[in-house]
Length: 164
Image 1 (cartoon, rainbow, N blue to C red):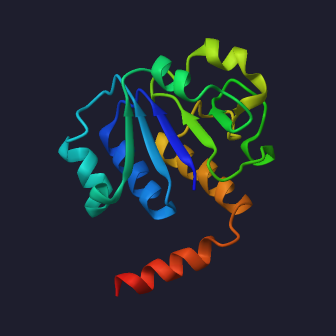
Image 2: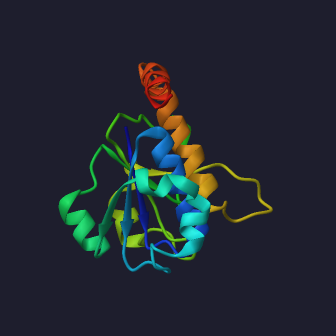
């Protein structure tokens, strides 16, 4: 469905929660090192519950390696607080890459400045500066799903029936 990319995530429960979301959407989770935890960490698996073994997971040694394999293009969406481009005005297609930076640093500013049209943001009131990573991924990914929903429900129902 989609490719969710976490660049240098720091908090295990966020990554576990996002992994669970990926399993439920049929999305691939890409983790870009360095990670702030071991992916075998109990906190990651606890947040992902029994979904972690079903996760389509790709681990990259560095952001440079990821970008060499998947250069930023029209199928890349860079989530940041440093743009005015609202996420719900972007056009998403199946297979797109949705990139989210670490909880403490975000995506490298150089990459954002080189690709301003690919930057997206979630609107927030003035009292806060950011949202939790898991919530942000959910908001953006479900907008991408909304735009590409045709056929998703049938696949989900068919998979549920197979499991019974």
